[in-house]
Amino acid sequence: MDLPSRPTDAENRRASAEGVAALDRAIAILDAFTTADRSLSLAEIAARTGLYKSTILRLANSLLRGRLLERLDDGRYRVGPATFRLGALYQRSVVAIDIL
Image (cartoon, rainbow, N blue to C red; front, side):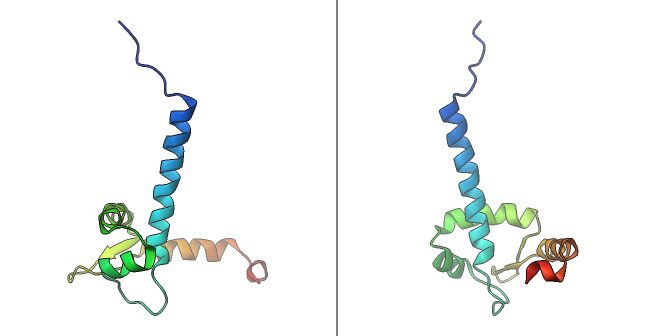
C-alpha cells in the first residue's frame, strides 16, 4: 500500500501564496470603508476593491464569523465590533509618541 505523498515545495509555496492573497483581499474589503461610511452595499465594496462580488461574499462570511464585519437587515455591510477591540489593543500597546 502506497503512503500519501507529501506536498512538494512548489505546492507549499503556491498554497502559502494563495493564503496570503485571500487575506489581502479580506483586508481590502475592510479598507473599503472610510470614516464617512456608515455601511456599504456589496456593489459599493466591489467598486472600491475591484473584487468580484462572489469573492466578496465568500470572504465576508469569514469576516462576519470573526465579527470584523456585520451584515445589516437591508443587506448592507458595516465594520464589526471586533475592529473596536483590535483598535483598543493597538492603542494600549503604543505610546502616543510612537505614533507621531
